[in-house]
Image 1: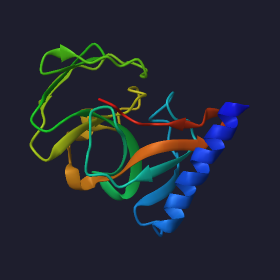
Image 2: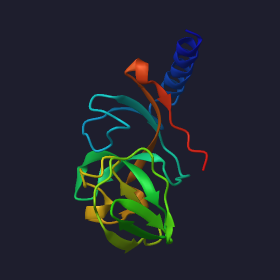
Image 3: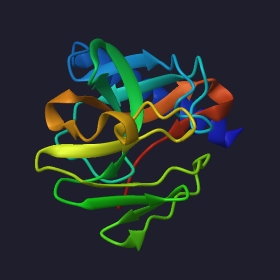
Length: 164
């Protein structure tokens, strides 16, 4: 019960911040694809903020590189200048295996070097493959917002703060 009350207070604060900011820096989105399952499911509602500080494993909303009218949600995996290698579904960054306990693996294999001012984004549901494994690294300008809270369904309320 205390956890629910605490989460409701946090949610009220986040909504209040969004209202006070005139919804310019804080936005509310509904998940419309299954690309981030199991982390997010269709219909989940999230709050995202504009952030210039992007780190590995941040969950971001981006303009789809092949259709700028479509907004998709993906996870930052590779940072500018890094070498990404995927081997049998495992991701290696500069030859070090990335710990990813949140994904549904596939058997993809590829190697890419990320240009400066670009990021490598992947779906948590790797079978979807509508991510950088297909369209390549994305430019920084395509990143719209960073997801900070899933507020609906309330039973799955979660704050996404990346301390890496």
